[in-house]
Amino acid sequence: MGWLGKLFGAKRLTFKFSPRWKEMMVVSGPGGHFTLDFWMGIPTISLPPEERWREVAPGWAAELWPELKAELEDWCRDNNTKLEIDPKAAVY
Image 1: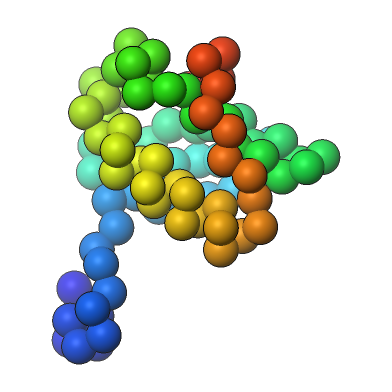
Image 2: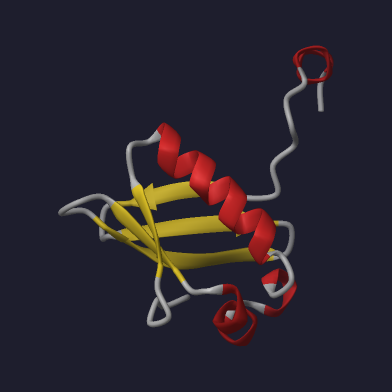
């Protein structure tokens, strides 16, 4: 974190979110990347619940669900998008 981040209390993020035009949200993190569904009719990102996340997430991200959810909530709020916790949500 640079000096401005330290001065203003910016937190370091674990994930970077990159929306794509084919209703996808590419999520990049410390061990690679994965994709979540990003529905455009009513902008909505689907995330599996924590228990299912551990089964379908890339190995490096399996224990990072709390951080992912918190950072995704912030991103969704800032981008006028709904976050839906859905047991049927896919992770690619």
